[in-house]
Amino acid sequence: MPVSAGFRALAGQISFSKTGITLVKSGIAIAALWWLFSHNKLSAATLVSLVSSWWVLFLFITLCASLFFQGVRWWCLLRFNKVKLPLGRVLVFSWIGQFFQTVTPGTLGAEVSRFYYVTNAASGAKLQTINSVFLDRLLALASFFALALVVLVFVKPMFIEKDHVIFLACACVTSLLATTAFLFWVAWRHKQEFGSEASKKICKRLFFWVGIAFLFSFASAVSIAVSFQLGSLMVDRPLFFSTSAVTIPFVMVANGIPVTPGGIGIGEAVSMLTFAKSGYARGAEIMFIVRFCLIVVRLPGLYLFWCTDIIKSNQ
Image (cartoon, rainbow, N blue to C red; front, side, top):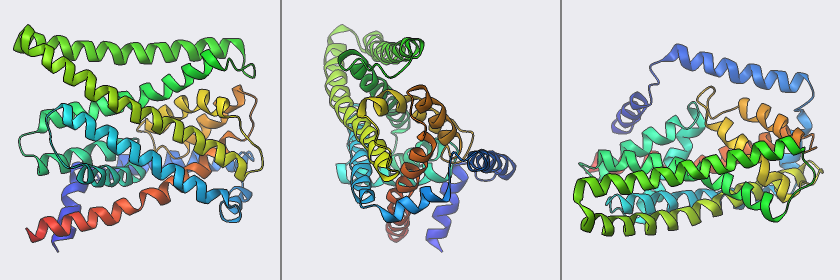
């Protein structure tokens, strides 16, 4: 069947053939989850809270909003790289990528699937697509740390240790400096390639589209922070937004490390440790709840993948 052939082609791109590595990483995820359950960091009550609380509806809405903001962010970066695809189409590709991110190690599935679809939709845009995907990840990370830095500066939380505050502040500044340095490097590279006059126009486009992309990225980070708050309400242990904002950058980094499929187990363990630094003891449970809801929200990506391949096969 054409759809099955399309799936095999994409699966090959994501290196599903490396069965041994996939099994090892799945084993790590299972071991991490088993450790959390055996040490009472996760329990069956966590799953019960998912089906017994009305807050789950708001959590779904918040996560959908976050995925939408991420899709618009990527569309802006594609526009800067002169890959002019309709927003709706980019959102579809982004949602498909979100699904594959759930079933592959770290963020690998999202990156490969997005590259696969955009380069098929816009021939000859391989380098531009790679640039947009890389910058998309960089902005995603920077926005989480930017949110944490805003909270540290304006809220000045007193609930975390001084050394943790210093470490967090250094991580925030480093992330933002790295992002800024990369943008200036891009501008300098264009100046060397096209000359001063042409580079001015390119720099204006760069900071215009990247600026808009960062705003949507920041909105996505806020949505994720709110989703952790909603998760805390589902376990009857309310969480301050400031606690969530200064903790989730490290949780998101852990989820992006290609050690287990979708960061399962690793994200929960890191969430437990980082939230504990802020005096909150149920970080693993909140991460587990948010992850479960995020998987449900990403599932339509499988349907969109199926429909997209059907359309391609009929052309």
